[in-house]
Image (cartoon, rainbow, N blue to C red):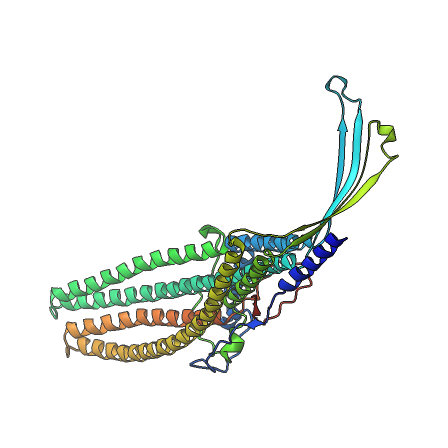
Amino acid sequence: MKLINIFLTFLVLVLTACTQNNATNVENIELPANFVNQGNGQVDVKWWHSFEQSELTHFIEQGLQDNLSLKARELRLKSSAIDAEMAGADLYPDLNLLISGTMPIDDLGNIKSASLGLSSSWELDLWGRIAAGENRAYWDHQGQKALLKARANLVAGNITTAWLSLVSEQEKKLVLASQFKRTQDALVVISRRFSMGKNSVTNIWQQQKLLKSIEVQQAKNIAELYIHQQSLALWLGVTTDNIKYSESNTLPSLPKLPQIGVPADVLRNRPDIEQAFAKIKAANENLAVAISNQYPRFTLRANYTTAKNSVKDLFDDWSGNLISSLAMPLFDAGTKKSVVQQRKLQLKALIFDYQQVWLDAIASVNKVLVTEEQLLTVANNLTAQLDLAERTDKLTTIKYLNGKTNYINLLKAQESILSLERQLIDANKKLIINRVLLYRELSHSDFSSPATLPTTSLSNDKNISGNHS
C-alpha cells in the first residue's frame, strides 16, 4: 500500500511538472497603409473576365480542368486530406480480432488446439501529443490547399499570357503583311522613276533591302506564333494540333485599374501567404509533439480470449484482463530536449519567413503598379510618334514624287513608320500582360475547385499563436 501511495505522489509531481505554457504570441507585422497607386475599377474573382474575351475564358476553363500539373496537385491535396484523417485515429482505441489454430503436418484438417480473442489498446493523450499530430496534419493539408490555389492561379495566368502573346503576334502578322505590300508598291514607283531617269539604281537597291528586312520580321513572326501556340498547348494539357483559335482576335483594351484597397486586407488570402501561415501552424504543432515526447505515456490494454484443445469446447471458457502501463523517459543524453530546442528555432525561422512573404507580396504589387505607369507612358508616346511618323511619311512621299526631296528622306520616313508600328504592338502587349501580372498578384485563387478536408473539430482561425515553452 505504501508503494502505491509513493507511486501516486510521484505521478502527481510529474503531471504538475509537465504543464505546458502556450501563451507566447507572434509579433505583429508592420504593413504600409496603402499601395503606391489605386484605381476605381472592379475585378471579378475570375479576373480574366475583365478582358471580356470569350475565347480566353474558354481556354482558361479548359486549362483549369485539364492541366496535368494541376491534376497532380489536386491528387496530392486529396492525399494530405487522408493523412489528416489518419492522424486523428490514434485518439481512439483500436480493436483487433485474434484467431489461431494448431494441426499436425501429417493430419491436416484435424485441429488439435485453437484460440480466439479480442484485444484493444488505447493511449491516453494526457499531454496532447496525438491531438497535436492531428492538428499538424490539418495544417499540412491547408498548406497543400494553398499550393493548389497558387498552381491554379499560375495556370490561368500563363494561359492568359500565352493567348495574349499569340493574339499580339497575329496582329503583327497582319501589320507585316501590310508593310510588305506598301513597301512593294513603293518599289514599283521607284523602279518606274528609275526607268524614266529620275533616280539612281541605288534607290531600288535600298528599297529592296527594306523589303528583305520585312521578310526577316515575317520569318521571326512565324516562329513566335508557333512558340506561343506551343506554350498555350502546354498549359492546356493538349497537343498544339488540338488548339482551335480565331486568327481575327485583337488585343483587348486595358481595363480600368482596380480599386485595390489596403494591403493587410487584400493580400491576406494570397496562396503564398496562406501557405507560409500554414507552415507556422504546422511547426507549432510539431513543437507540441516534441515537448509531449518528454513526458510519460499512459496506455491501457485489454484482451478477452478463449483457448482449448478441442474446437467444440472453444467457447466454454473465456478469460480477460486489463493492463495499464506507464512509460516515462528517464535518460536519453538530452536528445528529446535538443529536439524541442531545434523545433523552436524552426518555428521562429518560419515566422521570419512569413513576415518576409508579406513584404515580398506588397513589394511585388507596388512594382507592377509602377511598371504599369511606365508602360502606359511608353504606349501613349509611341502612339503619338506613330501619328507624327504617318504625317511625315505622307508629306515626304508627295515631295519625293514631285521631285522636291531625295530618296533618303523617303526611306527614313518609311523605316520610321514601319518600326513604330511594330513597337506599338509590342508595347500594348507588355502593358496588357503587366495587368495580368497585377491580377495574379492580387488574386486569392478561389476559382479552382480543390478537394476539401473532411469535417473536423479544428477551427481555421487566423490568429498566429502558441509558442510552446
